[in-house]
Length: 212
Image 1 (cartoon, rainbow, N blue to C red):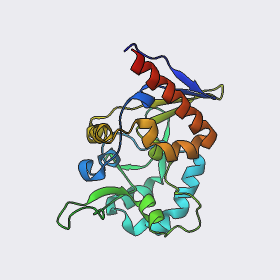
Image 2 (cartoon, helix red, strand yellow):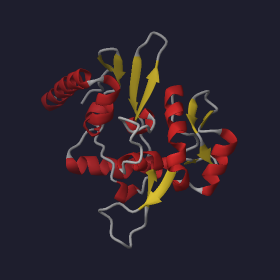
Image 3 (cartoon, rainbow, N blue to C red):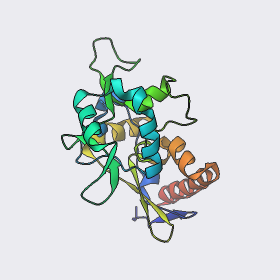
């Protein structure tokens, strides 16, 4: 199959592998390693920082002691070496907003997995003041990374990472592509009509693949 060019839906440029590659997170396999590996926090906007600061009293007791120390000294975000605003991390890797718990589908003797304390609090109904989970959109969109250009155009790229190999395998087993796995965050970010258009483009790309 020939290499596909960059695609465009509305004002959004899309790397074609978002439509062709398989992906589906399974925390029971990876343990949530994307929250504890890496060398920088998750990209975050000033508006998201304000929301995170609002939930801090609710999630504070769920956070690790060392994470609380970083948050006390540095706040919920910092500027990384590439000049991006990102969430604070511990020891150069762990997100400050991680916590550990067993999932309902795990055996009682299984090791707890890494979860986002913000999302956990939201799912438990402890953040009733929000009509959406106040976790950064960049986290919801992963493994897709968003880049904003000066002319208002947005670019979406699929970020391959070794710690997500189990998600690639799980997606292939279940027949779920990256864009399908991210239906909810992509719809929230760009709208239902945009996501429907993305589905039409994905269908065309799949048809092209079948014809080659």
